[in-house]
Length: 321
Image (tube, rainbow, N blue to C red; front, side):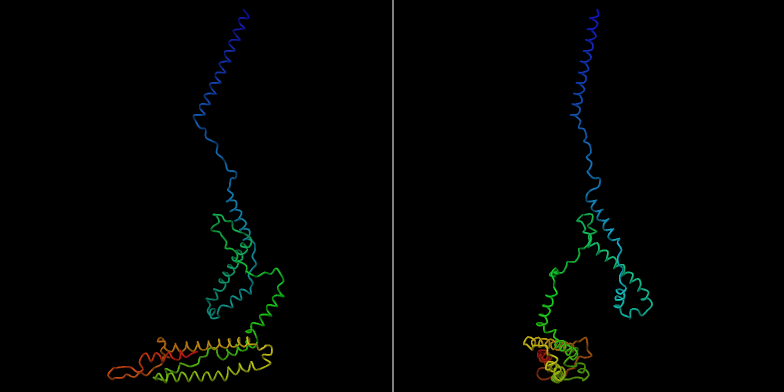
């Protein structure tokens, strides 16, 4: 009787375990099938950094620039402000109102000076990174250094040798050349070979008389220059004390000839320009009055005819060397 009861208990336990295993197996199969049917959303992938690398570079650059720009700037020297004020004409300060504007203008100059100094400091210290967020904050680069100036080796000896070579070859720096140029400026500068202010006041004249008067004035002026300017040039180079340092080489006198020819060419240019301005219709106070004859023969004509008159007027310009 007792054995039969134990068998029934064992049989009931084994049956319950079997049912539990079947239930677990059914649950696992149901969960597996549900996972295959419904896609589970993946977890969001967070960035490795909360702020981007580009944003960090922008912030670092702006902080560095703010630090550089906040450093103290040496004040502008008072002598610089005085030099600026000296360039302003005295007539500008005649009234009271301009004097009131002086200080605001100086303050503006000081402000511009500080801005330029800060910008120059930033140019020397910082390099703007090529980022899109800093496109509006780009700083112009520093000016390039002069090419060909190498001070890595001693240069004084080479400089002295080059200077001596230039002094020997460049004759224009010779003291005699400088004195010649001063003589030309004192006697030839601003002068012309004729004075055209009297042609209008003399009244009507013929073309031949106009040409003769013009040629006589030019001839007298040339004689005057030969007796004053040319004699001083000759005396300068004939004096042994003045030109004792020159070797009187052919190149030296070629340089002298070029210098004198340039001065004479400027004199001729001024003369031709003044002659052309005589016939400017907008300036009638110096416009010459010419006598013209009207012939009433078989054919009505004017003497001199326009072609001859034009040729006579242009003849002095064509004869100018």
